[in-house]
Length: 309
Image (cartoon, rainbow, N blue to C red; front, top):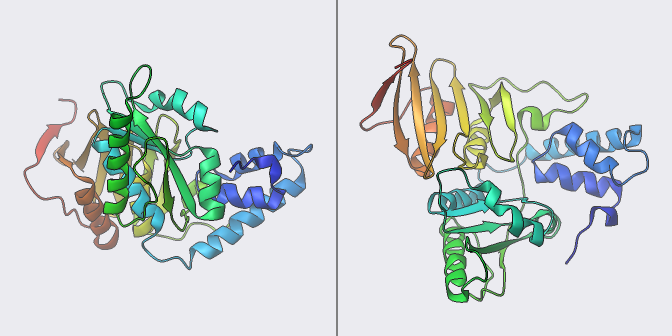
């Protein structure tokens, strides 16, 4: 099914972009304005602000664990196993296939890819089914058996994290994932004219999410669930980082080539970092403890790296 922005009334398009959870207020205004003759009109701004307010009010009623959390865990597992996994990747299937290589960091050599493009995201938000394309990083024609093997890995990761999968194993068919699409908004992604100030939290974050995910360079208060969302949403592209800043303790999460996730604990008195590589499961637990209890729960042998050394 094709879902073009021009086919939707302005309020519906605004609600979709807000539900997507990826763009800030001004970006949503610009995208909504593109379907009208008066892109900077007051009506666009009012409609988008109303969509933000309604989304954030609804967000207060959501459970701690969402289908999108399960989805992001599955995608990050795929990333670290050698399958580049992205959501809202380009406008359509053809562009997605031609540009997925741009999501590969220098030094990495992934085996395959999985992605959903903008039209797929619209179906996920409005119809509750996300569709994923998948394949191999090869020149020329894909070997059907090998392509199906990538599909099997994608389906297995989704099932392992508690999501249903509708796929018959054929490389000619993409993978459907029924889900209840909900994405949390926080920080600059939750701000709009007249929005309330962020509630005080025991944890703040800033992050860089290249090459196409944007950045939050100001420390922003987040709840434990929102901190988890940041951890799972920042893609494993070499150089991406997240600063988790507690009232007394902090952790820096850095994605390195491989990709591998490294946690660094700054020690200002000793002018060093104490660090080690972590699994995503470990990372979630450590971030949760920092957000809820204000302490560092990273155990095991740590490497000391002195500043300026």
